[in-house]
Image (cartoon, rainbow, N blue to C red; front, side, top):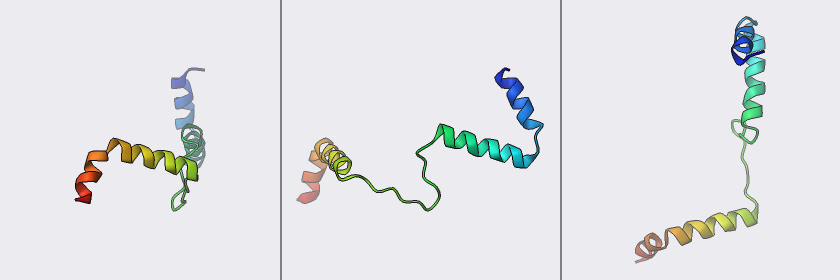
Length: 67
């Protein structure tokens, strides 16, 4: 079945079923997307790595801000 045929089949479904399919596809395509209001905390090692990169790449900016 081609993608166009699948789309046509989905369009023929009741709205409730279309919403279920949409939710399924969103979860499959973006499995790490947070739910509304959900908070994701960084692992210490990941935070340190990101912070080191920010400070390394913006060294001049931070020096000027410190003056």
